[in-house]
Length: 445
Ligand code: GAP
Image (cartoon, rainbow, N blue to C red; front, side, top):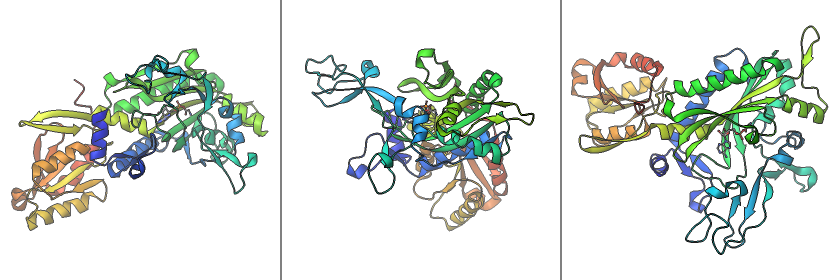
C-alpha cells in the first residue's frame, strides 16, 4: 500500500486533503490524473448501467434530504458501530475490531492488553454527519449528510415510475458523494469519511427477486473482468445471516485482494421490499406498482453498490508493477486502456527540433479532439517514457527523423515495450481501434 500511496502522490493522482493545515483524518483530494481516472470509472459504470440498457434510468438527488427519510430508512436508529474509548491514550476503537487494532501505548498491543489500558464500555455511535438547515439551531433544523445515495432513489420511486413510464423490472442509477463519520477510517482510499458512491436500485416483481439478484452478482463480476482486473484477485463471497444489514435478505460481496487482504470492493444486496414499505408507512405515499389490469405489489429491490474510490484503489493495486529493463528499474501502472487517465502520449524525439515539434503538435491537436492525450517535449526520451509508464499511459507515439522523411511514427506499447511504425495519418484510427480491443492484465500469468 505504501508504494501505491507514494506513486499516487508523486504523480498527482491523490493527495491528503487540506495538507498545509496538517490534513483531516482520512479525507483525500484527487489531482489531475486522479480526476481523469475517476471520470473514466464513472462513465464506464454509467455506460454499462444506463446508456447501454433500456431498463435503467439516471437520477441525481440531493445530498441533504428531509431528516424523516433517515428515520424511516432505519439509519437514525441503526446506522451505528459499537465504539470503545481508551481513557489513557484517548484513542477510539471499533469494539468489534479490537483484534485488528493497536493500542496507543508502546510497545503496542491490542487495546485492553497493555497494563495502562483503561477502556470504556462499548456504546453505539451513529455514523451519520449531522448538520443544520436554515439559520436557527435546534431540533427542527437538524439534518444529515447522506450516508448512502440509495435513499434518494427510494423516495423518488413514484416520480420515476410515472414520469419515465417504467414497469418492473426497471432500475434507477445514481452517482454522488456519501458521508460517514467512520470511527476507524484508513487504508488510504479504502475507508474514507467522504466518498463517491455509484448505486443502482433495481425494482423487480417479488417472485423474480432471487433470479435478478444472481443476475446482478454475475453482471458486476463480469464488468471488472472486462476491465482487466485479475481473476485471481477478485472473488464473490456470500454473507451469512449474522453479517447482513438489517434490510437485506441476501448479500454477496465482490471482494478484491487489496494489500490489507481480501476486502469488500462492491456489495450486491437483495433489499426485498424493506425500503419501499418503510417509506410508504412513514410518508403516507404508496410506493407500489399498479399494473394495467389493476394488479398491485410492492417491488423488491436488488442493489449493486460500490464507491469509485474503492474501484480506483483496486485498479491502482492491480496495475502496479516494477521490473528491470536494460538494467534500470521501471515502475509501471498496467491499467486497462479504458481506465487509464491518459490514453496516449505524443512525443517529439528531439524537443528542440522545430520540425518534429510541429509535426507532434499537429498529431496532438488531432487526437485530443477525441481522447485524453498528452504532449511532452521536455527531457530525454527515456525519462518521458518512464513518466508515462508511471501514470499508466498505454501508448506513446514518437515523432523522429524518419517521420520527417516518410510521415510514419513509432507506437510504443507500455506493457510489452514493442514498437511498430504507422503512417501518421492512420494514428487516429489505430488509437480508436486499440481502445476498443479487449485487454487482459499482463500480470496474470
Ligand atoms: N446502499 C448500500 C450501501 O451503502 P455499503 O456496503 O455500506 O452499502 C456500499 O456501501 C459500497 O460503498 C461499499 O461496497 C464500498 O464500495 C463503498 N463504501 C462504503 N463505505 C465506504 C468508505 N468509508 N470509503 C470508501 N468507500 C466506501
